[in-house]
Structure formats: C-alpha cells, structure tokens
Amino acid sequence: MIYGYARISRPTQSIERQTRNIKAFSESAVIYKEAYTGTKQDRPEWLKLIKRVQANDTIIFDSVSRMSRNADDGFNEYEMLYNKGVNLIFLKERHIDTATYKAALNQQIKTTGNEIADTYIEATNKVLMILAKQQIQLAFEQSEKEVNDLHQRTAEGIKTAKLNGKTIGRVKGSTIITKKNIEAKKVIKKHSIDFGGTLTDKEVMQMIGGISRNSYYKYKRELKKEL
Image (cartoon, rainbow, N blue to C red; front, side, top):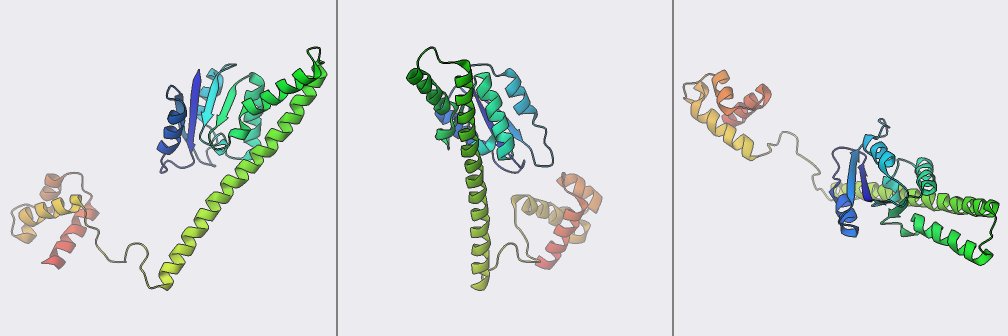
C-alpha cells in the first residue's frame, strides 16, 4: 500500500499544497490529513496510519518536518518505521528517504559477503541511523530557518511600507463593503421604520436572517451616515 501524510499546525492553514504534491508523486496514495498544534499533541490520523501500515508499505510526506513537531520526535518515528520495514519518502528531502539507507546497508552486505555476522549488520544499522538523525535535524533546522526568514521579510516589508507613508491593514473607522452587507442594507433601507418602512428592527432582522444584532445596528448607523 502507498499512503500519504499531510499535516498543518493550525486549522486556518491550507493543507491542499501538501496533498497536491503527494498526489503528483503517487496518484494512488491514500492520504491521511491532520491539523494539530503544539498544545494538542495527540494526532489521531497519524496514530491510525502507523497502526495500519505494514512492512513494504510506503508513506509519502511533502517534507520531513510534516512527520512530527520537532527533530527528536521525527527521528523516533523514522527509526520505528524503518525497523518495521516501511518505506518513507520525503519529497523535499529525498536524501533522507529510507531507501537511501537501506541501499547503503545492502551495499555493505554485498561488499563484506553473504556470511556477514548479525552483529555487523546491527552495528552498520546503528551508524546509518546516526547519519539519518543528523540529516533529519538539519532538515528541521532548515525548515525553521525558512519560516523565520519569511517572518523577517514580512516584518521588514511592513516597516518599509510604513516609512514610505503607506497604510498597512484596515484603516480605523473604515467600512468594509461586502455582498452581504450591501444586501442587508437594502432590506433595512426599504423596510425599517427608521427609513420610512413599516417593520420593527426585530422584524427586519428576521427578514434578513443570519445577522447579529451588532451587525444590524452597525449597518443602520452606516446607512444614516450615508444618507
């Protein structure tokens, strides 16, 4: 079986980029999706996946940083699945794929001969896992650096814009015009007693539907200003 695992740290983020990349690599991949934060450590979809996955199955990740929240946890998951015989593929860090280390182990066995001792295989595996841990640590550090660089560039861009006299964000007291408030104002203007209609505020709110009292009275104030 071929699986994919996509994770975002906040529900407001989009997970589609990860799933799109996984599907582009393997259209048949069964993808497990998850959103969780650092304060909520349980990952039900991940737990379902690692219970289901078997030897010779494959799990595809967009990046090694999607496998866990930090490098230490990531390596523990990596080592556990490697020893279980699961193939791990990281689209952004192909050098960390389990196939890389399995190929290195097989080459050592071929070089040494078929009668290689189990202790030698175990020792070689340990060395390879040390290398894998270093690479996973570097990948997490690079991922964190990219995020920090993005935040820094954004902050610098905002600072530069402010220095140039540009307004960042919504101007205090400004009105955001949307299809929803345009339609609501039309109903208020036509039917509210305050604007020559015959309906009370309660009746107008019922007519509009799905509007809070705060929004309703805000629209009324804006209408009075406009008129």
